[in-house]
Image (tube, rainbow, N blue to C red):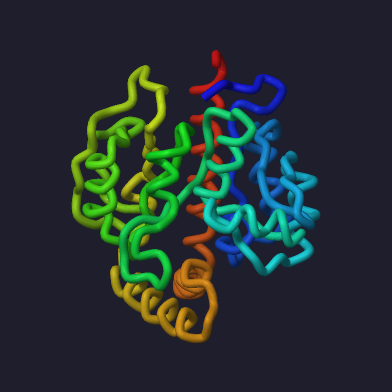
Length: 265
């Protein structure tokens, strides 16, 4: 990738911020974001067929319009051509980064391999292989087959490193430990996925919450609704907002880590 120095060094996806934090108000989001001293972080989305990149304040004006669509790398061109508005997934953000010459993207829980209509192989995975963009995230989501997801990545030439661990044990729940390629040191060359996990003591302990969320998300999927926002809403409801809180803080941690990694780019 030829890095374009007129753009930021990384972009943050907008899908979780737009759809996934059911109990987090825009006021609370702004306070947490600015308190964390990441106000320079740039958030990416699509507005009326244009790629928009901005800080938190301008993004929140977009969030308040309550957009209904999300776009991956596969649907980005349609969104631009049809002058649509919506949030960007991890793969959508990586595709924007690829086009603009931005070397890093930031997400939280990413897609993978699982029993989700249209996402049996989530576009996040081929995007990691093909985009030339390094992705910093927390983990593949808990309702996916995390072991198969990481195997697909490594089999397809994507190095998967932990920020301070060589295993992945889940996203906001704790599951089976899956071995990674190693611990992050100085590697920064794509194809690369960096996992920055939530501390296990902060994760949700009741697996029954996850099972109920999967059931609720499948019901939403059958109604033609998005799977992941429905799963997030179910977990948020069952945990009285705790799941939204820890996901927001994890995304903020991922942004802070990426800012450090790109400081000398």
